[in-house]
Amino acid sequence: MADIIRLLPDHVANQIAAGEVVQRPASVVKELLENSVDAGADRIVLVVKDAGRTLVQVTDNGKGMSPGDARLCFERHATSKIRVADDLGQVRTKGFRGEALASIAAVAQVELKTREHDQDLGTRVLIEGSRVRAQDPIAGPAGTTIAVRSLFFNVPARRQFLKSDGVELKHVLDEFHRVALAHPDVAFQFVHNDHEEFNLPAASTTGLRQRIVGLFGRKYDERLVPVEEATDVVRVAGFVGKPEFAKRSRGEQYFFVNHRFIRSSYLEHAVRKAYDELVARENYPSWFIYLDIDPAQIDINIHPTKTEIKFRDDRAVYAIVHAAVRRALGRFNITPSLDFEPEPAILASIDTTPKPIQAWRPQDLGAFTAPPRPSAAGWQQLFQMGMASPVEEGPTTMVMPARTPPVRDPDMEPGDRPVFQLHGTYILTQLRGGLMVVDQHRAHERILYERNLKLLEQGAGMSQTELFPRHVELNAADLALVQDVLPELRSMGFDLELFGGRTVQVNGMPAEAADEDPAKLLEQLLDQLKNEKSGLRNERHHALARSMATSMAIRAGRILSKQEMNDLIDRLFACEMPYHSPGGRPTLVTFGLEELDERFER
Ligand code: ADP
Ligand code: MG
Image (cartoon, rainbow, N blue to C red; front, side, top):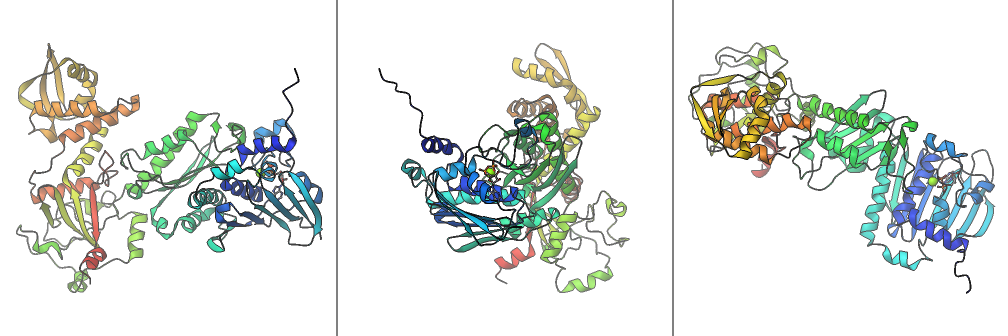
């Protein structure tokens, strides 16, 4: 019988190998852009036609290639970037397999024009389906232009596999975004079908914010919170999105390791976790996180598209990334960004409680016509700096008698602002720039949650002793659950004792829940606890604090006095993260005067 195994001809082998590297036009975009960056270019122009089907062309001002290299670069495993296998661990450049150009040349018509800076003449190479058609000397600018035409012209199956132009363009944009974000110090231009999509000037490394705004729009400027953490293991830098801008669709989530875009569900988890109580589960926050790490500590040589990574010390990296994001969000959230307006200028008519005449302050004179309105820039600034914090500033933390003129003009006067309860559910109050609506249940949840967490850490909750201990009957499962969390419940002020059989004796209740029915509270708490996913050990406190907060928090329908509403608002803003309930839902919404003016068609 004749041999049936034959060696594949080179160009067929190349086509098959190419399949791994070149899946669609976007793969070409990625490889060409990365080569230009590797060549030291600081200006790169990407021109695409028909979502890359017809043309992908990249021009750079990098170091260029000699005539010999211009021919060699299309050979498989031709690379100037590693010499020996040992180098692999030290690779900092993007490509290192020497496969990209060979793969692209196997499935397209490629024209390379290149000139080294110290040479008068450059080289032009035409290659088509791995076959060199021409190589001539040419005159032209220093640097390199590679034009890739008619992708998959010789692989009809692949060509048919491509999606609509819209989809392919989306992939191209994704790759462009990644490379442009990884290298803010390089200027990029992107032209699609003769239309300029982007023209991004080179920003210094500190200009990352500028690059993000250049790519995703001006609105991103106010959404970003800087992240910065330097440790021996890894340096973390970049930005994370403010929680309230999290979106329903997976938004901009980028990790870069040593300026290389990578995917990592592991790191994603670390960041997601930091947003835990800030963003509802179905929403996606955005982030642009850059890790700098010794290349010996990572392994990126696991897949031809090279977007996955292994860290030698992955636990440490996880913990550092998590802490860095957590700290960034905490720092930003710690001070309220809301500017309370103490003078009842707008809601006065709504507030029906009798009010003492306010002492006037000189600065009020101007306010007769219209309340002061911060400019848009002003709001943004407030948001970024955080408002003068009621916690830090001595005088504002004291409740001031209404008749005493304040020593200084506080942005927020605790305990005495006009408030109005709407449908027993929402609290309305005035801000300098508009109106704030607080969800009373969620606000209280947040307050109790943070209080519970503190108590759990300190292990010393105050409980209001019941005059007559109450007995509550539980089923076996609930009893086991109570036994399991008994010490923690006591820390949070829920003083329980196992009475024998399935009976629990309630000796004391958390002070804040003193008028709740103990049996009902316990039942709600156990329900909540069962809903919590039984998580890691260190999540236990969060789960307990959250469950307890949810079962104790005042419910919708509960009528509050003016004093109670003011207290609630004060305590909410004394919280570390006032804007979201422990479940990640908003505790409050605001309406700017501009927004109201607009509704009134002013
Ligand atoms: P790799 O990037 O893995 O080395 P490629 O196939 O992408 O493999 O490129 C092969 C070689 O061609 C590179 O190592 C580099 O020497 C050269 N090269 C590719 N693109 C450029 C460019 N834009 N400017 C200068 N040299 C380039
Ligand atoms: Mg390459």
